Length: 186
Image (cartoon, rainbow, N blue to C red; front, side, top):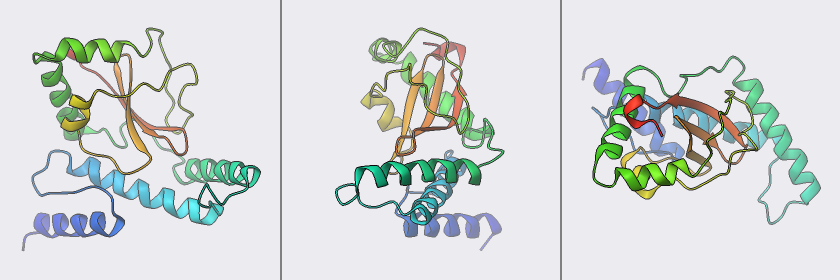
């Protein structure tokens, strides 16, 4: 078995054991899925150390304190995180190509309209920072969700004009973002 085949098998096994995302050899999103799987494991470890409980059993005050410990733990564990940690090189190109083709297709006008509903104000994004409070969390159109790699529970794609954001909804953190190409500019 070649080194690349062994890597694919190891990544698939890791993803299955974490219950994260499905990984297949030759997938242009392979690196992204691997990084998402590793992040989910990191977040789970931080949540366990922070004593996060099932929400229905948690005292609201204790839950809020535990959640703050989770956010601080993630930020500490990802100290030095930078733009491109998830959306990088060929992965970013695959996302850009997918989004460009969706927006150029027949339903592209309706997708653009839905995405333009988010905000027209320039927004500054910070990796490991809070999701901007001034930006409404609007749903991503289903056509886009079907075309992009699925995400594990708690992670979401969000659009802010001219940007695709990888968002941790449980921690309210911006994990990464990429600038849309001019053809897909919203």
